[in-house]
Image: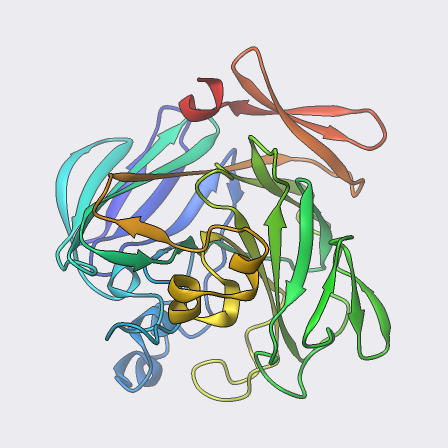
Length: 348
């Protein structure tokens, strides 16, 4: 049974215990998250050769491990995104669930809460053994593109191999210390403007600045005239992986119809290098980046927040700050917008 949460401000979100997916998020009367166009396609939903996470692709879900695991037997993005969760407690605006399966021997619990203008999530991972990669996977769709801004990054990297060879506008592999300008097939590509071309799938990993205390991604959607801000704790999730999905996959369930979609995947992982590389040694770990959680020694707590406010500006967001218990978005032209109450883990 689908769980629908609602707060006093009429913000809402649905949680599907069958997969742990969050969807139909509405904040400040803004429809925030993407919904794949094949969710009502009976033929796709009945095709068990397609991973459940792709058949039900929408909103946000928690990946453990992230991507395809070459270390354990798990579906793409793990049991956390493909199998049932058990409801532990629920009220009108919040719910706490536990994953029915274990992951590398670990127990995973999920808390979802509508607080003011924000959707807050906490995942707790306890017990188990080995190195586990994790990531959130929220997706937004832009009807007519928009402006992307991010917190300070040390480096941006594309994988050794493109997601869909021949259907990319970035070069693979490539890297830059200026995150918004990466090499492309036809010259430098400005990642802060989306989309740049049609019929492409691209993926880039951003490494958070070493001294960061708040990690964030801000998406100013042009047609929708709003600002979506996704916030993480960079000490726990040191990378942000950006997925530009704009009609570059012609096979089921995508069939060329997954367009204008932007994924913001905050994680502790080695990007597209895989689970084994994250646990045993990767390009990112050589740069001193933590790429997996060491299970067993402690309970890992992963915090995540999503905000949405009306905003017609396409100016660059230069910072997200905590001020008087609120989160404030600061723009390059000097203007500011209050996003809502800051999560406790930021205010503390």
